[in-house]
Length: 79
Image (cartoon, rainbow, N blue to C red):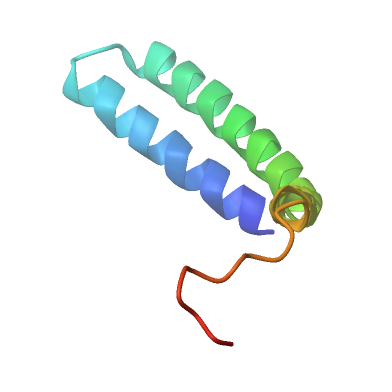
């Protein structure tokens, strides 16, 4: 549902921009339909994969920091 809202909003912005640049109504509508549909599809794909992207990112950060090992104390430290 949210993907349709995002697609419609981006399509509307595209239509308004094309009309502002004095394009014909037909080409403005075609550009708005193509842009809105593409945006809705891209948003729905990204919305379905963002949990995987977050998990991979957190896993990368954890794996990168695991190999550091314990830090040594500075000189003159008695514990």
